[in-house]
Every structure is written in C-alpha cells, then in structure tokens.
Image 1 (cartoon, rainbow, N blue to C red):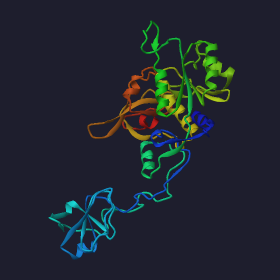
Image 2: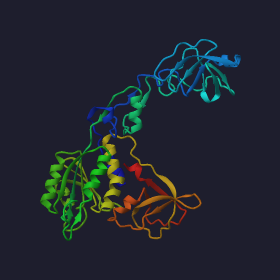
Image 3: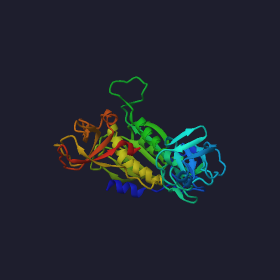
Length: 394
C-alpha cells in the first residue's frame, strides 16, 4: 500500500532533450526509435567460406574460385559454375544462393571440392532479417542500457530524445556525523549515508544536489527543506524522521508542507516519511545505513523511475529454496540481505546474513540480493522464498 501511494503520486517529467549516443546510457527514452534502414542492409555471409549456386554444387564435383570478397567490399555477380571466397559479414554476390563454411571445403590451388551435404540457402543472413526499415526498435519509456544504445547505433542513429535528468536534492541529518578523512571524535561516526545516497542516485543517472549534513535543529532543518524545494524534483533526507526528541524532519515537514505517510510495516525501515514541501515531493528514510539501502531500493527507486517516465518499474524476483530456517517471525515484512549458494548436490539455495541489525552495512556488501519474508512467516530449509537480486535494483 505504501509503495502504491508513492508510485501513484509520481508525476512523470515532461521536459525532453536530445543527447548523443555516448551520453544516452542510463537515460529514459521519451520518443520511440524507429529504424530508417534494413538490418542487415543486404544479404551477407554468416560464415567464412565460399559463396556458390546450390545447383552447381549438386551438378559439379569441383568449382573454380574466381573472386575474393572480404567484409567491407562488394563482389561481382557470380559466374555460373564458379565459387567466391567470402568472409563473415561480406555481401553475398548476385547469383549466389548458398554459403558453404570453409570447414566443409577441400581446396587445391583455385579449385574447391565440397565434403558433405549442403543445404540450399545455408549460412546467409538475409536483408532485413534482424530489423526492417520503419520498425520500432526501442519503446518510449525505456531506461537505456548498453544493448539499446548499440541497437540504435546499428541502424545509424547518432542521437536520441530523452527525458531531462531527474533532479534530487539530498541531505543527511545528525550531529554525530563526521565526514570521511576527518579525525573521528568520541561519540561521532562517519557519514556513510551521504555516499550511499549519491551512489544510488548517480547509478540511476539522476542529477544530485548535495546539501550536505544538516544539524539536529528545527530551524536548520526548515532551511534545508526550503532550499531543496527551490532546486529539485524530489527531496531526499536520511535520519530525523523517527520519534526522538532530536528528530526534526517530521515536524518541519508538517509545518512547511504536508506529511502523507509515516511509518511502514517493513523491517528495516519502519520510520519512512513521504510528503511534500511547496509542492515538491519529499521522502525521508531512516538514518541507519541498511534501512536507507532497503527503503531506497523498495520505495524510492520505483518512485524515481516512474517520475522519470520509465514504463517497467518492477524489480526482477525469483522463487528460490531457502537454505535456512526462520523461527523468529516479525509483524512486519522483512527484507533480509541474502546470497545465492550451491550445495553439494548442485542445488541452488539462498542464505541470509546472520544479523538483522540495520546498522551493519557490511551485510549489504556481503549480499547479492534480498529475501522477502512475509509478516509472521516461519520458514524451514527448502521452503520457497522471494529473492530479489541487487542487480535489478540499480
């Protein structure tokens, strides 16, 4: 329900821009891409071998090789009763209807003999076999991956129309936070959340507006929220949304804008906040780094994707056999850091990190995914569980 509330509130960006292919990776396509050529553009050889007429192979014991066609050049029409040496990707000469792979050929000087059976039309990639002129090759709303960029390039397209970058203002809260590289005073901890935020957002090709760390003060929190609202499409903060006396984000949000959601039945990540400041959406995640990672992955990521205009925002998940017993159910849904392993019998199982602590960030670097355990659920080894690979969350 919380996820639906966030996603349904997301307003897709309207602004577009045109970028060169080498700047398109990770961006969201806003206009569909159609090919203006056939791919391949002409019949070409799928093998290194010899282009022939099939009927000649049936009628003659040997064929003279009368031309050589490397990739990137175009041969002459094939003389009946002859063969052309041809290489992978080279255009099949007019008159040839079959390519025989070189492993099936015995060659003496300029004469070849075929060893084995030949199928008519074999080893030729036909014009338009992959893509036809006018075909839509990439849908609007696609988050562009290397294969999409390569596909566009294969049709000669050098630029794409994409959504502008989604702007996210971030700040961390906590007087206990110290920046890496500085001396660590007693009672302080290093600020990992700032770098976790930045890394997750930059991986999504967002434009990050970093407002730094905000002191645990009401006025400072209000100033940060107001500043963020003037610059960003989304405001993200870590910490300050719990019920402690030093947690000011929730109160500032209520005073400056609106609070539409607070507290979710998820472990880790219970004190998740969602609202807006001056019409700009705000998501506040807990300050513990594992809680930040989990709530970003499950709630913030799909909100951003929908705001970017991405069509498919659902992460991949699998049913995998549990390699563990679970006898300590919680009233909340639990996202445990997990790893796929193969047992001695060759069966794939998933194991979970032994600690449930939301402060153990090393559990995330240990993991290759997350296991979702339903509220009040108990498990025995071998039971099927939901497994979400981390690779589908970036």
